Image (cartoon, rainbow, N blue to C red):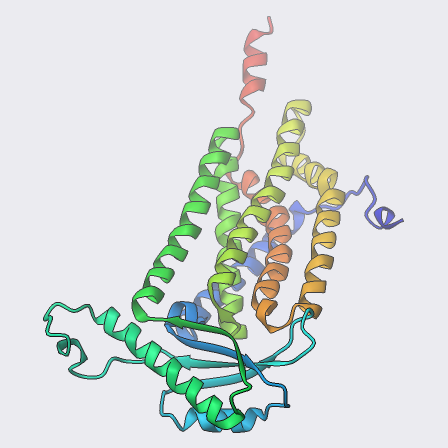
Length: 332
């Protein structure tokens, strides 16, 4: 029944809308760059360094009291929020503390002049974690249960940022190589343009919404890259088949035909994936919120780019039909 909502024989003129789509995509990309440079990403503890402490108690927890007690420790920026995952019956509280600077002269305490500042900073994070735990026990009693304590020092957070960026670049680079070997260079560049388009706009969305950007978001972006590439390859496969089948058809008409041929599959895949992500958004709780929002946004923008970015790029570059030339040469 649902398949009838997306008929197999659609005749939508997507290529005619390419100028409008180009303007829309250009505005999103420019806005994303402005947001990234003017606002910046809201890096989580994974990338900024600092302390995350998650705890529960048998009695209701007053968030205001927790915030006041932790703020009084003088550890800098403090965030306190409640979370409740769908598998949990009790509410938990998470305390975020910004990265702690090492005390002046701390590097010389050990007698080694070449002590790494990152190691000293890691000790400062550990000390801050102990202070917060002691303060929470004094406020709520010894029955408090610490479910998770993450301490990330400046050395580790810097390495995570570098490795996360390398992972994204390598993923896009390997996709470029794959498409280049499987298709012609016009297809390869079109796929990479669509991928970069999706990644930049996704980063801009995180800068505007101020959702926490952590390692889970890197995983989401890598998943988006794979999903977007898969969607683009499906369309490109049909374009290649139709180029062989309709050697004299206008390229714009052929691209429209190819997109419409795969539209039912594209919409069905996107909708079923979004249904699963919607369940995570509703029941996944605060822990999965950033990852889920990144995936939902990525599915939408990835589907859009495979139709309005990757496909029109072939028209702009004028993809060749080399096999038709060979056939014409062989014909007497």
